[in-house]
Image (cartoon, rainbow, N blue to C red; front, side, top):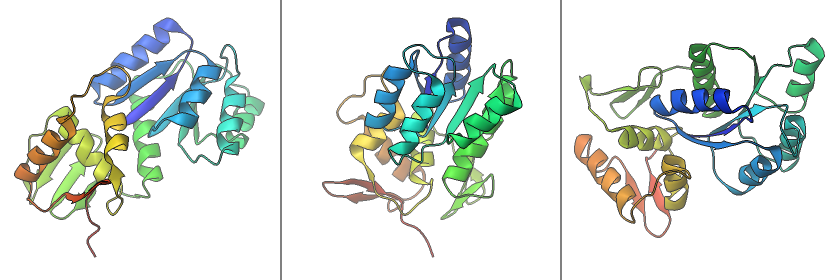
Length: 220
């Protein structure tokens, strides 16, 4: 899960970045609205965390322009603006949720999980598919009731392919979601993770769409 954190407060940004990275998210961090808007319109993310009081371009302007582009990316506003009219303005501009500073990191993580679940069209916390049970709140994975040990990148890859199944994910999109800007991925790294997931579950779990990407087929 790749998140874009847009926050100009250095200590707060560092705290959020570290906490969410430890949680297994791929987190890219920008500190001004203009750079953030460019990234949001040109790259792939699962969710954005957006401060409102940003230099160069205000957070509400970023959000309005993002929605004007047709993007449905989940956006969680993080702000010290706690007046009712500010919350209404943020939600009316297209925010999916609104969290007032200061906030508890555990609440932030829970809201992120809820937004990601909603964006994937899931009502239940557990992701269950073809004998696999994946719990995003604990990051525990079971296969036919037995626990399966996954590396952080294997977990992220499985989560992306199952959110929801039935979508072809291009290689480029998966690499962006798993690595972001701060990690270098070798040319065959994704294929190695795919190979390991097939060994840990079953050989036909992940289908290769030649020249395009990968797919976990929807089971009916």
